[in-house]
Length: 178
Length: 330
Image (cartoon, rainbow over all chains, first blue to last red):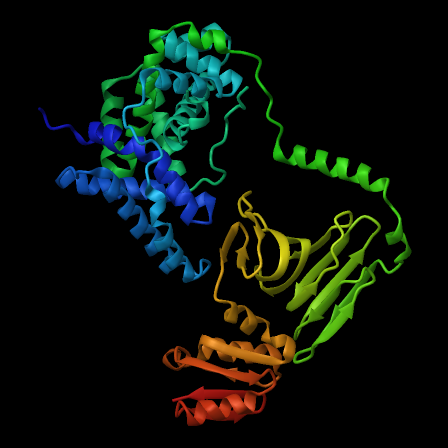
């Protein structure tokens, strides 16, 4: 077995936890606009550790990093009362996994991907579909859709970001599972 | 039917900026002509920080995942069903307001007889005052407080301009009782509560019933919660925290209504700030180590002299009186 590189490890072990992590951060941090920054900081910290040695298991470490980060931030801010630290301890249980089985069934995965594509804004979805399913380049998409290359580029970049948010940032919707 | 998804978090924090840059790199590399020079530039950017790498890997992994859709080429195209236009929250809210106005227009009655639309009430430093409003609600004003009431046929609008007030609201669902303070809104759902304002921050203590608190927005994000009895909410623009302390804590916070200040776990500095709200003679503590001393006790709101005695005798500190100030030092 070969040692995975950091990017592969990150994609395989850390990103699947993004929804739970985001939920944990949102529950324990009142200011929604800080969440993306906090999440990134957690990722950076765990990758710093992984550069030396890949941690195993990942989940408990990820959440203890998140917890310590929140406590650091609470100490630095005046807005959140000290009581929040106690709340954080009480809410430590929130790190229970949302998806108990790690291997999501292939069908469920396809459904989720389709759902994500469907929810893109119409123009953006058209552009992304041409790139993903027909393998067109940005230039070809611009010509096909009769839009400027800048517009095509905007939709592509925007689309990739939206897809990442939907695929990693959101919890799996159990209600729709059969 | 699925709603369209186009929401990026509203603020452009550092992580957002990095993510946008990563998307730019990723897009250029995958969808446009890519040269070796550009590859080198991308490597340089990635090596600048782990945060850059993480953001790039995340997007690359998401794109890689969608690769599976190629196995079912027509699925996506077929599913491109009519798109549900998502109404903006603002439009939605306007719609609700319009609907509410129509409902109310049919029930205009008793409240027309008030005739006392906007009224201003205030207290000076050290004063307190109880107001009986025309709708049967009562408001107790604490020291140094300004409150405006506007009782219209449609709603009861109160503005706490500054200070602190205790509300006993006569509940009437068809005429909402709304307190605005520093951009935050508290809507009564049948309630006794107190609101204290400090700049753009407020503290709401809910004693009885229910009330809904909506904070002022910050960067387009507001928080809201429905408060239950015994809960204390602290709000600043875009931030809201709620806790439920021991009941004794609540009665300590409300002790001003009987002219008393109760300090349980306060520092000398915080206690001095409290006294200064009620008294023209101001306590001054310049030494931070003195200000951090813990105090506990119960004093009349105008009991600065008594407080000074305690500070002198219990803590062994010096108190120097200079015209309108009392300076506490080691």
